[in-house]
Image (tube, rainbow, N blue to C red):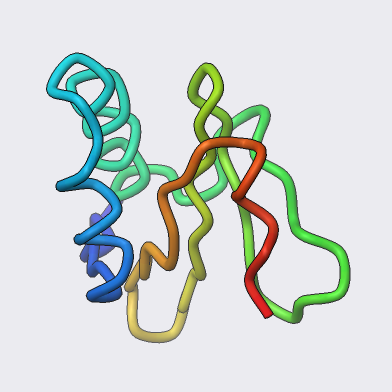
Length: 88
């Protein structure tokens, strides 16, 4: 099965850079796993958005889009759960 390409919105990249190293070490492997399975067990489609999904990693959420035609997973946000859903 071919792997998806992972891309990051510039804002998501900055959010990752601001996190502590031990939090990033927990989050990054989960993001890399999205290349093999963009809709892993436990992921949720966000209501009110056409193509946004989220995975939970402790108190943090990774919000992303899946483009099956292009085989791309675009990470939109990496935030603490208290801030994660303020996307508008």
